[in-house]
Image (tube, rainbow, N blue to C red; front, side):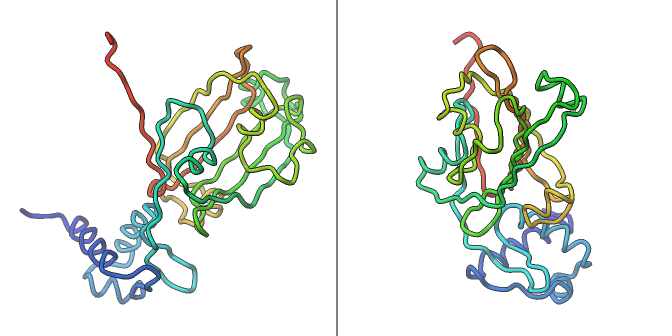
Length: 238
């Protein structure tokens, strides 16, 4: 069977990574490209896939290293729960860092989604989720200051706006999520320590109260290799 050059390159890289111990440094990009008989641009594009899958990690000025494989965060999407709750149930250790709480004014898009007047003060909460020391998710929630004020978030904020609202007793009902594969923007790539343009899984979510009001509008960006989401579907006549 004849394989395309890119397919051969993927297979060769996968074999090289598989036989290298965790923490091992791969050959430099010029040497590896020469060894595999491809251009550096082609090699770099191929290595992006292995990085987003969590198999290697490139460090500026240091090289490319094989990563010790971590268990993926796996969950169905039928039940609304935070990443922290899912990880705790699976016995996985994740940590939250780089928490930034900022104040913005609602533009027309946010005003329409959150049903507030334009230029109404909003609170925006961004943070990075880490698995071991590796950033694996970046989340940004936006809410009206009528719903949540920055001073309400105590020093023990666990990184989940959903958990905070549940503990506070807000009458939450459902979340409507749109899921898509995207190319990382420069800002998101910097937060996740990946290359701009790398593939990410994006959730854009609207969290509703029992009064059918959107209380929280959020974006979550996930590295594909660290998450395994699934949905259970039934036949329509069952």
